[in-house]
Image: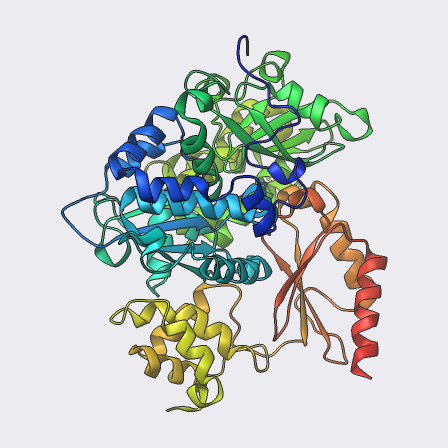
Length: 419
Length: 166
């Protein structure tokens, strides 16, 4: 953290907490809103914008942490049209950040996606919202109408030849559609099942055309990066994790919620300084760093003092992921926990790959028995074995994700599984 | 024009405009939401009509209905209360909330109250983990969130629906 700025009292993403009415278009414009979009369209080149975002160190906030500018540079310029698809299918248990950004600071989100579309040469943006965000999607539709009326969307923007339109598309309850190729399948009207990669979407995406799929939070950063520059953005966070992150804090803390903090903030700060500590002042037992897909971190002093960044969390045998931090206190039984995570993944497995589809079915049989106290030590061994055999054998990460809490809990909290 | 098109001509046109001319299949999901506006579920005839509009078979439409949890092919209560009991919500009392709510209503998960007004369902994460216990209400007209709930506040909501019915 030394030498790095702290973001206190001024948020980059959750700016509605500093400027309460920023969700209104006129207030957003009073703050200079959409001036950067106009500047980009009238004065900047696509390559310049891609370089700028690349140099800012911005990484994908959906979980994978892939460098955003690099993804943009992979877009095939010999195949047109291009599409920008916004992944607003926020469904990882423990994650509720994109919803707050779109609900409370929508126009910064819109300006971000509009600049990004211009940068990759897209004239059309689809926002894929999870179906449960029904009300939110209807609000976004109203905002889109306002942007059209203000001359910020449509044909010949700012007197140039650039045209841009935005459409929302509602999912209908399927976690798998957060996986970018499953999302594209769903948007094309098919079952939401992942595609084999390569080719990746920047080469062959929506309707077979070059497509960038980015997460809401990722794109909400773009307007300020373009306005203030890559160096400004890099002044927040750590060497390999530039900027701030919205940490969704849930579980057994006194004050759950979203906290936008610079990368490099420690788990201890998040839990105790921002989250108010553990309910009833109990001891913290484990941390799930990336929602239900996490390996469970043993909450030692060393773990609590670990900075939250893409490059530091792996030392704890876990990943930063989408930074959906679920706190487990000393009363949480890990047998119960793995039964809950497997119940989720069994329900959400799309059925395409046998190891995930069948593996989760059998894992749920085992975790139910184990959680009810009727499992044998052979059941625990078998559960570990089934999980280990799913790993690395599926089209997408869901299969992998389903095994993380199981394997790590059995290995790291063996006392909870003793029969 | 089939029955669905006649009933929702403008809405269906608006949906089809969102997607390229030769990619009408993309409209299957929004069209299913339109079909559910009456009765809260999709009939076999709706599936055939949707298939006809976008050029796929009704079997393909049915496979989409089956894949996603927010589409229904059977009637339930007017209001489907869909309680999240996923792990982060469960860590904040969602399972007890669901059990007590069912107890108060005298029904089990998946059942509908005698007056046909409320069906209780248990669902996966709704991205409201910091405001548990929480649920969404799916009805013919919308899907709406209700967060930081107690059994008392939920029973009050249900009582208000009952008054509206009278």
